[in-house]
Image 1: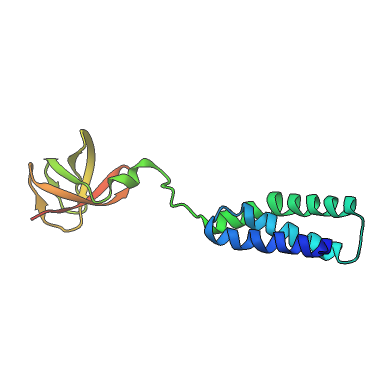
Image 2: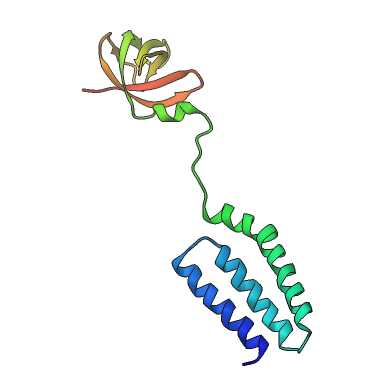
Length: 144
């Protein structure tokens, strides 16, 4: 078996392995082996083949892998912790008089200023659901 065939077979095996173990390392190694097989086809020395493999690996792992990971494995990171308040239930501690005059709600032991999604007044001790967080004011709707 010729050297370029060995490089090519190793590359294809790693690309197939990437389908089962999606870490992107097998992809980078597989592409490095395949790239090296192209150089090996022209009967360059083994030392140059190894150097080409190292160069391509450096290029793939340092250059392309972080960009690919960023696009494939996007995470939904909250800008702040207030995003976790959405859809929680709170109790009204000071009446909420519509969307303009803020009242107060207690959410997990903390007090927040609150306005309503409607113009109806929400009396004390009512249960409300957090719909939106706008700066330091939560916008709520009454739970019936």
